[in-house]
Length: 394
Image 1 (tube, one colour):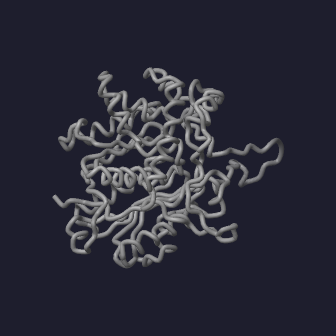
Image 2 (cartoon, helix red, strand yellow):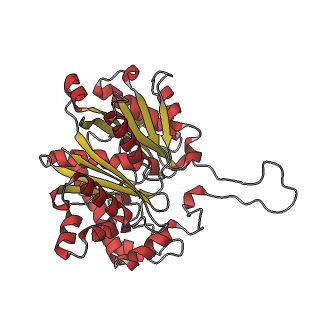
Image 3 (cartoon, helix red, strand yellow):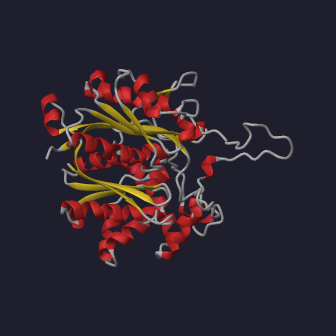
């Protein structure tokens, strides 16, 4: 079987809601990072076989985001594209789809990534197209992230499931505090130097954004403890959840022989990919189950993993998922948490929903390279009981 590799991968800085990137549409962020990735790898846009681009809030990406990004990034209009909506999983799903196309021999070079602009997400006003004679108008905000099937906010469900698994509010606050601390340690060590590509912002003072906006140096454990729970939930607060963010990520995929022919030293091999669905309340633990599924498919053992990335959609996700993976082994649980999100996670970095899955993979690959290689797994939940996981090898 052909070995499929990530030749290279990059992302934009992740901006805060209403922050430095707020004037840039999601497709512009995506086109900017795709152009930069092609420049870095020396790949001509004409060589791309197809693109898979994920997004979670379609309203902010307008229509067919992948197609727009292809054109704005300079790819020929004949290049096929697919816009993927699997909520927060979307850009990891894009990588999984690209991986499968390459394994089948149906593509040579594939772009896979994701975009989101929470800042550009419009309010929704339903049932007004054909007129409204009397009464109030109701405006919806998609960024409240309620489950449309139940009407229940995701933050509330997450907190309830965390408590069911014995994960307390205090543990979630502790994890969030450490997420910021680990991020700044990694930043000072240059861990994100090759990952983040600056973005030009026309008309803004300075004209260029080069750093993530969400991480807080002044965060304290005491401040986190003072924050009230949100959306009526028991544990989730504005401090142990990520912000609403803007950003884009992109990876270039090819088979190992192609990379060798081009003189490219790839970031990692994509060993396997898994996609799961579960109950509408399964998101906190489903990433852990998805990782276990990839291991079962490949014969790689949990103890073989050097590093793990689990998206911090809320701090509860890595805490609950590692507990599920450890299966009652307290010593094993301690080890799993020590090797999970070693450079910090989305609570610190931010979570532009459609772009986060690919960020996990690129960060995991570079972290493994700094350790001399080995196996690693990345997982992310999304879409009211779904999860993706990717097993990689460096």
